[in-house]
Amino acid sequence: MLGRKRTKKYAKPLLPPREWARVESYALDDAGFGTDRFGTNADVLGLGYALGYWLHKHYFRVVSTGHDHVPKKGGGVVVGNHSGVLPFDAMMIATDVFRHTDPPRLMRYMVDYFVYRVPFLGVFFRSMGQMPGTRANFDGLIEEGHLIGIFPEGAEALGKTADKAYQLYPFNPGHVELAARHGVPVIPFGLVGAEEQINMIANFEPLARILRMPYFPITPTFPWLGPAGLLPKPARYFITYGEPIDIDPAVLTSIETREREVARVRDAVIELLDEGQRTRKRYAEGKVP
Image 1 (spheres, rainbow, N blue to C red):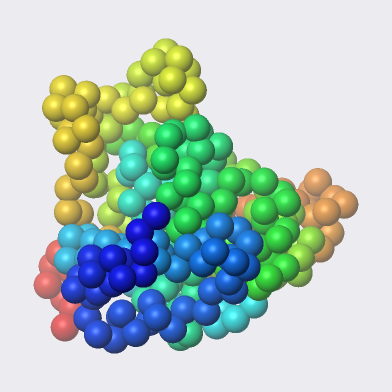
Image 2 (cartoon, helix red, strand yellow; image 1 turned 60 degrees about the vertical axis):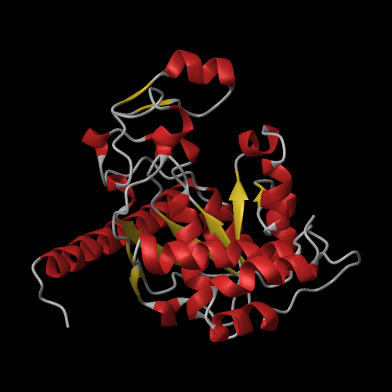
């Protein structure tokens, strides 16, 4: 693991002074050996934010609105659409929240298990504060007042082909159940732009099953160009956060209520996607300051 001096050497030059100050101001509850009890490492977090900030500002040129809907403190479940073959959308949401909350808040994603089967990748994700998607991890994080990121469409949604752009897969109800059980709000968001970063032609399902992956992408450049074929295009991202949704506690005892609340969150995400697409159109037409 990189030491603090080496982290500063590599990360600090990538950030404006005020952004580096945000990294240093982040309050990590050190449980020993420089990590919190979930394995989050402050040094790795600084390096990750430096990379995320550069991509956020200069590569994807993120335009985001509705930051006031993200709670300044306390637990919350941040929920939205998922796409783009590789999870740059998750990285940009986390970077955006860290950049636009004061004090800075770290998004903790519930990550699918296949990530933790990849050598070194699982350790890196954990060091960045991202956790395997278990109920025990969710409970522990929420009880400590963290923001939890969940993509209810699942990892399969990353593998949407171009003909399914901005069509939402069915939402898993876990996010409303967990929010209701802990009495925390769901903060919906819509992200426009990730669909265009990689043009996925098909999902090679037989190979995906062999590799125990949720999908295996076929694109105009992958696998023909190897890993370089998965480099995303610099499609501009538009992120819109919506008003927090208080979930009816009856979702824990009533299937009908659960389905209604899931539909309410899903409809909010659809509306935010529509708003994001209208914003993108205004930018394309030059109708913004």
